Image (cartoon, rainbow, N blue to C red; front, side, top):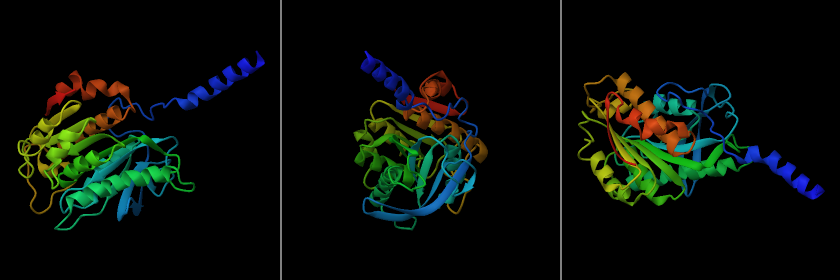
Length: 300
């Protein structure tokens, strides 16, 4: 009897620790989350890859090299667009960090002749590196990464590379892409091989990676657990914080496009990674289907 009581007491003591409680409840993922936003610049070395990167993450305080916020957090690798610096996506990656997502943004493959297959490997190396750091004593990210909640994302070339990377990495749980462009190897083909949830976000006024020529083909190739969200009047460079040479324009303001992007992609990541089940309606339900300014096509 004594042994049974001790066993029961131990089970009650351990039960709360065994349950993975959500780090956040994203009642409005279109707005900034509750975590202070921190970042660090470092070298990622994993899986035979080595490159400079910036990591945005939820901190105990805001700013450079702050400690990571208490708890475990999802990991994301984000791929930049062709000839684009990762600073072009700072507002988006800061938004993710404010909702508790640790995001590694590789600075690799930034020249005029990038390798898409190498970029895919760099993105996967970022996730491998995060997993390793989680188990490395003394690392800033030791014990801070939910290693079963890993995701990929990216813009344009980076979006296509994210899809290729997902096809190579069984540890990836979900993908969200922005104006994903066809790559070599093919992101369309990679999409067709994926069984995990995948989100394709595009802009109806994109003249660089047109929805019909790129994201629609990827979505059509993908089977269930996928969606195509198209921002009305959205443009290719509207997913970035500023436009440069060769950029297009749309009929919606950059601020509006970014706000919509923050909301629909944050909801997707937190829901499909199992962080917040309350976001189902904002991903698959009426709230998603009737969101002003964004068309919705999906295969739940």
